[in-house]
Each structure stands twice: as C-alpha cells, then as structure tokens.
Image (cartoon, rainbow, N blue to C red; front, side):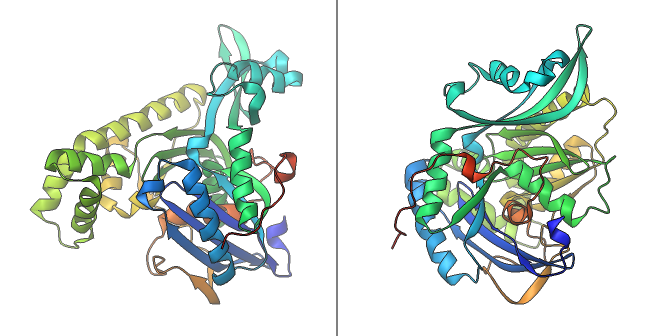
Length: 380
C-alpha cells in the first residue's frame, strides 16, 4: 500500500467543495507515519450558497490564492463532488445479471435522475445479497453524477491551477479517513455510523469495516436549525445564526440554551427520524450487521448538545470524530486559525480523507476518464 512506503510521499491535496465553506488539506506519509503538511479553509459568502456558478467562481479564486500561500506542495488534487450534485442509491439486480451489472444498474436508474441516464457518470460495487420474492438479488452501492456538472467542478479546479487526479464523494472520503487512522480499532466485523452534519445538509454513511456499504444525503442541516430560530424570533437568518452560535459558545449551561433547544427540538427530531429510516433500511438488508457506534462530523458537530440529542434518540454510543487524531502535526506546517490542535476538528474529515484516499473499493473516479475543457488561465 502506498501509505506505507519508507520514503516521504506528498499525498494529493484534498479539496472539500462544501456549499458554505471550502477546505483544503494535504498529508505526507513516511514509513507508515502520517503528517499534516497544510490545511486551509475559506468561508463562502451567503449569497453564493445557492448559486452553483457563482460559488465555483469564488472557489476557483480562493483555491488559487490558498495554493500559492498555504504551504501546499505540488498541484495534484482529489476533489469531493458536492453532495447536491451526487445521487447515492442502493439498487437490487438479479444475480443472473452479474456479468452485465453496468447495464442493469443503468436500467434501475433510468427515470430516477434529474438528467438522462446517458449523461450520468456512474460508479457502483457489490455490498450484499438478499432474497426478494424467493429470488437471490445482489445489492449494489451506486453513485451517479451529471457529466456536465462534474466537468464544471474539474474545470474550476484547472482554472485555479490544480492538477485533478481523482474525484470522490464525501461519504467515501469520510470512511477512508477514519478507517486509515483507526484501522486497528475498526475491524472487518465492525459497523460504524458516520453522521456529518453540515450547514446545508447531513451526510449519512454506514461502513462495514473499511468498506462503505450505505450512504444518503439528507437535505437538512444547520441552515434549517437557524431558519427555525429566525422564524420563531422573527429575525433574519444571519442574525439567528449568530444568536445560536453565541449561546452554544457559552461554556456555562443557561436557561437561554435550554430555551434554544426547545425551539429546535422539532427539527432535531426530524433529523433523527430520517437517520432512523436509513438504519431500518440497512437492518433490512444486512440482518447480521449491528451498528456498534456513531461518529459525528461536520461543522455542526462542534455543538455537543446537538450530537447528544440525536445519539439519545438513536440509542447508540456516540462520539465526536477528530480526523486529525493519529496524524503528526508538522512543525513547518501551515493551518487555518480555526484548527485547534487541542480539540477535535470534526469538519475536516472530508478534506483529510480525500488527501489520504487510495481505496480502490470506493466509487472514486479517475479524472482522466472524464472529458474536460483545457485548463484556463488562473484567476487573479
């Protein structure tokens, strides 16, 4: 495995193309020891959150700036496709179709995507077998993305002078990050639930040991919590965001925080119920796979009370994940001010996982397989 070479190797830069923030991280490997070389982030202005084209333009300029000043080595990069651009499904096809799985998966996706299946980039792999009406079926994990939207992300990165060597989805990057860091604690028989709560959505990923077996994008996240506060208090959502964070930053428990969580209870129950639906589906397919623990990630995971509320409803042991654990901090490294070496950094799992990713069992795509426009001049 290339993470165990004796000579130091600069791994590709992991680029997490989030909807509310951009994160870039690079890891070096030497003799099986991982070292964080650089990690930088940029907040995306609210007016770009729901405008993909403007957001890509902003990200291109920021990537170019970070690449020049952030301490990164080389230009090779692996991008995460934003959750909003990917369709993740588990499909069942007859065992008899094993030799023609590509066509069978396309047939299952036909009419289920927002674009013609012929325009989709599709990756899939076998995760299990079930019986349906007495017939043995194979369950395949499927990821689909629009070729044109994927090309737009790659062209944006080329414009920023990155050499894109791979693409992956957020859920795969998360699993890659933690199975590599904690491979001794996550054996093949362990089932781990990762819950990545971001600002615009929540990523659900269930891993069987080192293999991603189930994932789903839930369109509810921190923005919905802020909107709830804004609606009740009749204030702008930006102000509600500041109110919620100010209360949560207060180290002393207060009646105000209790009142806040009473306001948010309905939305927290909604998030929990959606996660429970995912767990029930997983249980119906993988009857011998009991979930052993939950790891919370994403920007909203800094809110320990939110994580505790969801874990209590799931009735599962949980912890806030730290993708930086097990990585040596380089004395010459450069990191953004938001990274605290003394505390968990749950929002960095995707960027770190992308940098470390070399897992051929994931539906990662080689960028050379996609026709892209020629690199443009870098943004000023």
